[in-house]
Structures are given as C-alpha cells and as structure tokens.
Figure 1 (spheres, rainbow, N blue to C red):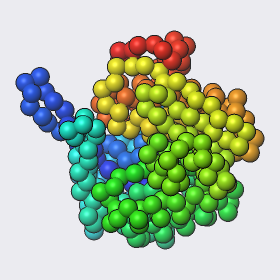
Figure 2 (cartoon, one colour; figure 1 turned 90 degrees about the vertical axis):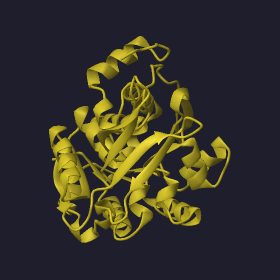
Figure 3 (cartoon, rainbow, N blue to C red; figure 1 turned 180 degrees about the horizontal axis):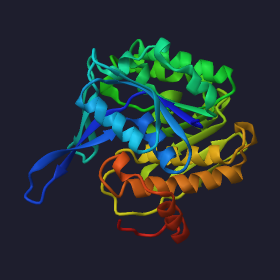
Figure 4 (cartoon, rainbow, N blue to C red; figure 1 turned 180 degrees about the vertical axis):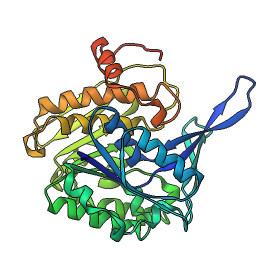
Length: 324
C-alpha cells in the first residue's frame, strides 16, 4: 500500500541539449511535478502511488512504464484514447533562465474527473500531494479539490506545490485566485520565492510566511536554489545552506527536494502536529542534498539520486564542490 499519493500531471519533457558542434537537439525525459515527487519518494524507500490521466498514445505508455519501473503504484493511472499526453519543450531564454513551450490543449491530465479518482488509494495512504497545475481548468480542478478535501476529512497529511507556469493560465488574476483557494487544506507547502509572493500578495519574506502560517499551514518550505532553503513553522524559522555541485540542469530539482523532504516526514512515523524543528532540520538537509544532486544531471526523473548518494553528500557537508 502506498504511503504517499501524488495526484496531478505527468508529461514528457523535451529538454534542449547543445551538442559539441553547437547544434541543439531535444532529449525526451519523463516529468510533471506531482509525478516527480512520487518517483523521488519511491526511490528513497517510501511506497508511493500516482493518480492521473495520460493519453493512450506512445507518450502515455512510456510514462506509465517509467512509473512502474520506478516502483510507483499505477492503479490510479488512466490511459484515455480521447486525449493526448501533455508535452513540454524546455529551453533557455535570453537571460539564461528556463523557458517552456507546452502542448497541453486537450491534454489528458486536464481531463481527469473526480469520479475517476480511486479513493481507495487515498484511504490507504498517509500523505496526499498535489500541485496547482490541475487547477487551470475543469474537470481536473474539481478532481483535485474534491480529492484533497476528501483526504483532509480522512485525516491525511496534505502537501502542496503552487507551481507557477504563467503560460498555462488564462490570466494572472485567475491563476492567483485558484492557487490561493486551496491553502485552507494544506499542511506542508513548498514554494519558490516568486511563488511565495504570488500566493500571499506580499513582497517580503517574514510577512509572507506569517500569512501562510495564519491560514493553518503547519510547515512552509521555501526553496532558494543555490542559496538553499528556508523552513518555517509557528515555532520558528531556519535557513539551510545548499550543497554546492556542478549544476547542469535544475529542471525537477525542487521536486526532488520535496520528494526527499516528504519521504523523511513519512518515515518519521509522526503526525504533522508531532513534527518538531529538529525533525524538520533533518528533513531539510536531506532534501537539499537530494535537490543538489538532481541538478547535476539532465532531466527530472533520470537525474534523481539514491539514498546512499544523498547521505554521502551530507557527510561531506554543504560547502563541498561535487562533480557527478
């Protein structure tokens, strides 16, 4: 039985790679933030499952095979011939920041309905994870909200990733409203600094954190890339430095961080109210090491490290320079 269930999108990332001769080609990799979290937790010894809809096409079968190979429970995965598997092309813009082009119109992930969600998987698990991209349209929006509400009513820990992809929304106003609307269900949240500003409508760190904690969220995880992360609860705030690696591709590194963080939370055996800052310190350091190692290879799922690699990096300390 899975301890962690992720619900949401899984897609194919075509990541731009520059060859030695300067030409660019696109490498196929499995991706999608909720699926990445489920795979990372599974790789780290926590039984995990995924609920979502894929197209009954070559890409959908490829992604389901990846989940099964990684030990993720796929009883909640639907292959639907009426829709196409979502694709994303990932490159760099003029500022060397990641840029995305999505092929998601009539995407299978957007067409998961609540009636198709296997609630037995929710009954069996301890933690339900979801992201904001299910909220971009119906019926996936209702599927996400109703599933999370059901899980909350049945005492499950709820984790949330308000993943900001502006081009997938009709407007910023609609996006911000939808992303904030589910905060009342959430126990643990992972945000970038930009996402923190978006969901709190506040430009400074401490007031933003206070706003989230005042909604009832128990643990706030703020990922800061090369600076590490900040963990906040009503009991305090602490910053944890990043582990220095030779960064190749940051795509999925935040998902790897969160999958590792949540895996330690579940393995602790504690309820969300029993978690103390000492526990969170251990979870954060483990997550930082995992995220760093993930950024040292191309792709999201293909770059995910093992538990032994993570613990070896932790033993060397956060200031280590590493080539992988």
